[in-house]
Length: 533
Image (cartoon, rainbow, N blue to C red; front, side, top):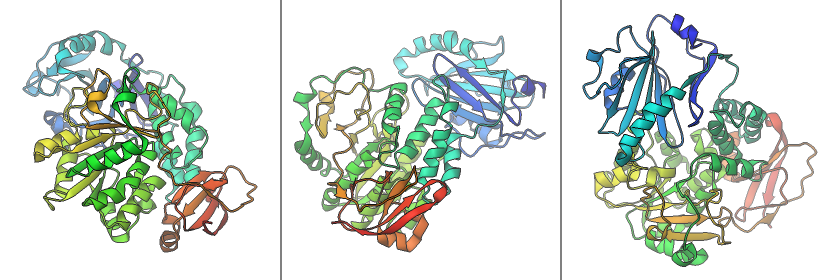
């Protein structure tokens, strides 16, 4: 395959293609074995227009990629039969604009506000798609698309032998489903030098790094990387907040108003940053009030269907329950909900088409279709709870939910104004609630009912002194387990809390705990029962 060797798209070689101005990148990791048959379909692929689904059914996708920040781009490297890219083969809605040079065609999908261009490399085709931010600016975006983006698309001809393990897989292998949180963090820390500021993969590395760092309270580097991550990802709130002291409610007043307003609705949706567990802490603290108001169902984006069923039987999450559920604050949210008698529901499905609409339909099937009058509490990630479109793109999950049910969910955003957004003014409040009309002007459509400024540490219980432990080894983490869970499943148990080093005090509810101090490679240095004073 001369074309593949020219661009080093071959087994054992990692190739990156990117736009340096936009920080846009696509990566062929070198783990695909080329054979005489067409490529196999990977397990996870970005959503594509229905007219592109035959590509997936025919197993023509070699690898996929997408940006995580605006403007949103997605791409597909396809293995196509010779001559496949021909006028008669194009879907009817493609209007050819350019038929010269390396591009096979370019077009606009006006119904989805999507631009695309296909590059043909003999047996391979690179398909890029750009999603317009706002339909009214489509003409300008088209000019940008034609003039700026693709001329800067660079193939890395000096491909390197594949040696870099994706950071998530690296952490998972070190973790080994045995509460080895420290080993996972150390594995990610050890490869930090492979992701310099110029790397198009830095954002993905930071996201994985922060996810595992958030599992351990007080871990070095979390705050600094969190701030850098917030600066690298474009913020939806542009400029300082205006008039928020006058327009918002603060502290205990905000807490009471939030509970009073939210519990009057049938469906309430909170969002969270997946790398900030304190967003989960807030919901945990609010659960008793919601349960008292008649909420019997808690739907979590981070749950799988099978995992939810097992948790409802068992009463708590375990290490194998999922990726996000092994984080101690998420596990505690599940623990408290189960103790209150609430039913846990999973609504996320991957690889089933338009993620937002699929989420909404699954949520309806798991809740209102079974209990039409039931009150539902939802915890979703980031923009899924926005009731309109996300910066002019398609409807988000909450918008589809409202369209399909006629129910207007009460939506609470606590990610856009989080502490590490560099544009947020901090005024010393532990909680501020802002109704949307009081928000500053922004170029984005922010369709949520309430915004929260959550300073991250206000929900923690009062610190309790820990018994004296003399541990010579470093680094170590200290884990506190609920005794009943530890005795039932041992190493499958998820800590109630865990800390970097040996803390002088811990933030947990009074009671009895199983304490374990763990070093590298899963070595247990000390373990015993401990009763809070």
